[in-house]
Image 1 (tube, rainbow, N blue to C red):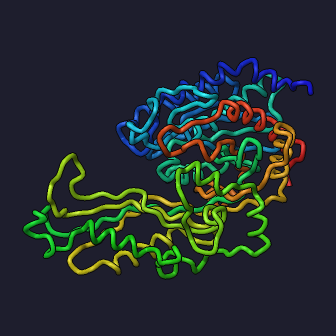
Image 2: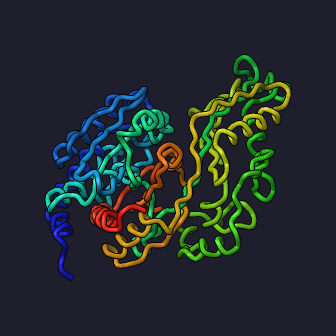
Image 3: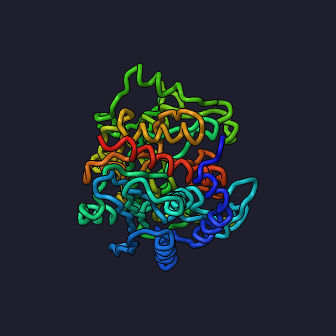
Length: 459
């Protein structure tokens, strides 16, 4: 088949496209750690400059109470559909650095994959949109109006994005939101994410004696906050791995047998899954498959736990305090604020005498489900059929993108989640990576989506 002008342009410029992404990946834009604040701002400036070079009508850095938002637009005809592209330039902390095979902010390419923090989540995926825009501008122009809103706080809850959206409804008005921050089943089985779980993230603290104590002199006579915290956490699941917080499941949307059957038709190799993770058996809520546990069921997980002495050698101490970070993934129709409240009430209620418990919410987001009979989903499906030669499978992702529900609530807009990562890309983990093939093929597919969406119009 003869190459399209876009395929030719991407191929001719692929080395530059990759090099520009590597420059962005070198910037340690870690939103959760204030020591990286200047780098985070530098990443925003880099994107603004590249949008201007690509030919937008305007690009600007919009200040917030936290990290800035990069906004850019190209309006060719108000009568045409408008697509709002969302992405985030901030990244997760790279700790623990010692587990990386190469420095997280010194990107390298090995075996056709780009290794760096943010390679897939989300710098590699957001940068595809910028390069897709450039490719269109260099080959006849864009098919519809485009607006780009790239934030720097997705990894810490997007609190200031909500304020920005509410205060700039006219500025960012569109017909649909386009997001690349999800994954494919595989490069052989392309897919489109149509469901996301919500999130409630918090930190707990258990306080015992007013200072660290000698474990020989006081052990057995004073409540040990670490012991207590472990018991409390263990009690949050029953023998069927169901969460024991009263009211937790009250609003969980139960899928029909037909819906569950459809969900489980997506290709999935359980043995390959276990082998990839180096585990002997899967774990989770009784009565559900692995795909169901990660897509349509809520969860509660400890993301970190600490207290007492953790340095080299021994120190016989009974710690004064113990801490844990806990996240709960939520499904329709659970509400993150309500679940946070239920957790806080329950966790404090199970604390024994002799300790004080504090619960500090961090951030949250709501679950979202996107209809598959919409014009924008059909355009996304047609794009995959054109560029990958296969019809994509609709899937539900276990992760959370809180802005999807924000856009539904504040703008009345659905999102098209056109992601090109893979589950094996190690996002949020050491040795994060993103395939060069996926990066370049994603650019091509985004162009195809915009063409098909403009052709189909707006419902």
